[in-house]
Image (cartoon, rainbow, N blue to C red):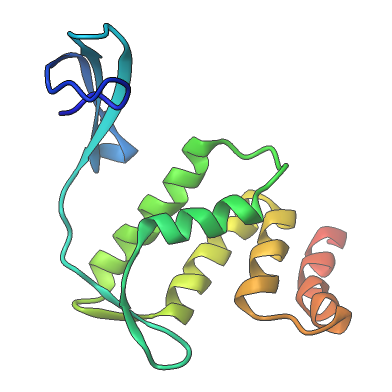
Length: 153
């Protein structure tokens, strides 16, 4: 593993432990050249699932793209990176368990929105506004009506 700081290919593993509910291994490493420490994650290489976009295009599933969308939705919200990683891992597990080679973007979006709704309602509405392409304030109101009804009960 090359050091991200000095690019030397000489390190030692200080600590290894299961991460993401056992779906990854977190390794804490120390570069023997510059003595700096960094963390790496080892994950099972999953089959390349294609995402069917709204326009019919097929693109490989990209966890980084999902993470960027979640980070934007959760910007300035009290949500840790660990919780975002948990949502991404849960979504990857959902895809792996339910789809062989292709999944519609709609199904991924619905899975993420369900998890966000339980975690943070503001992040949920932000994500939904982009995902569902809200055109005006009325779209926001329609999305909020069920949530407002739940909070009054």
